[in-house]
Length: 209
Ligand SMILES: Nc1ncnc2c1ncn2[C@@H]1O[C@H](COP(=O)(O)OP(=O)(O)OP(=O)(O)O)[C@@H](O)[C@H]1O
Ligand SMILES: O=P(O)(O)OC[C@H]1O[C@H](OP(=O)(O)OP(=O)(O)O)[C@H](O)[C@@H]1O
Image 1 (tube, rainbow, N blue to C red):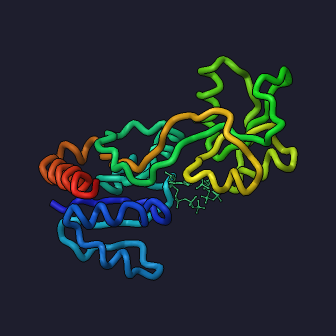
Image 2 (tube, protein in one colour):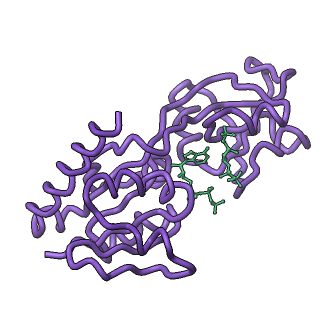
Image 3 (tube, rainbow, N blue to C red):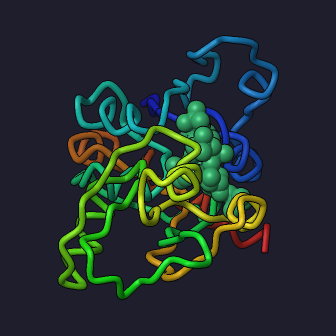
């Protein structure tokens, strides 16, 4: 049976394609794509390219069997589908960051800017602190620099964005990577194909290290 896979386009796609190829999937059509979003040439694997937060929606609505998506997005959306495999690509981490003069022990209620309000809320609840969260869509690093927020919770990979904007990390939160997530109904209906794909990906991971 054909496996329908939603792949997060952009950064996640670029980082995961070598692993998909090493597992034996021909990704040349995806590599050479222009604006094409659906790839149905391979009878075993059909791919769609979607934005990360939408990958979970396609998965939850059974429009696809499998999603390839960052664990940041899965955590933010509190996704309940089966998280089958950590692909270990797209590795980065969440951090609380701000300007050098930020005082993490300030008595005034903190304002935190982030693209990830749920993750931020859970983190501050866990440490027992009540904060105000402002949702930002991107370039989150601007917020403490222009006085919109006291600090940010954002993804950090190389640290260049923080460094180049004179920001520093105060606390590291959870590590993030790209995951293979499976629709629970598909796991029953296409069990052998899905387990075969997962085994091939695991083998490819071992070849790559
Ligand atoms: N340095 C990084 N910054 C952000 N996301 C990263 C980084 N490294 C890996 N990732 C992963 O890549 C995903 C973001 O990739 P994607 O291309 O969808 O978003 P984007 O680069 O922010 O694009 P857009 O600006 O269109 O939202 C994240 O969900 C995360 O899992
Ligand atoms: O530690 P680094 O290697 O510098 O990577 C981290 C940066 O990359 C991401 O931004 P992205 O490029 O996705 O742009 P955005 O701010 O518009 O989301 C993330 O939000 C950080 O800003």
